Length: 82
Image (cartoon, rainbow, N blue to C red):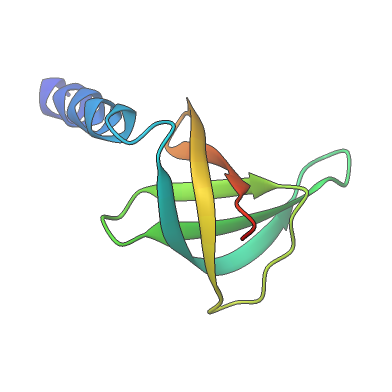
């Protein structure tokens, strides 16, 4: 149990290093919450799990995002437009 807690803490610290940075993600799927709000879910090249609220990306699409906030095992992000 202590090892799991340490692992979570270390991964949180790892994610924290990338907050407010721009990263490219691979869109994996989309999910809906209880209110019907749609989120795209993806992953960065260094395995940070990303959720993008109010965005529907195509599975396999590469999207540039800004990493904004850590919530649980995910980083809430926003799409960056060129």
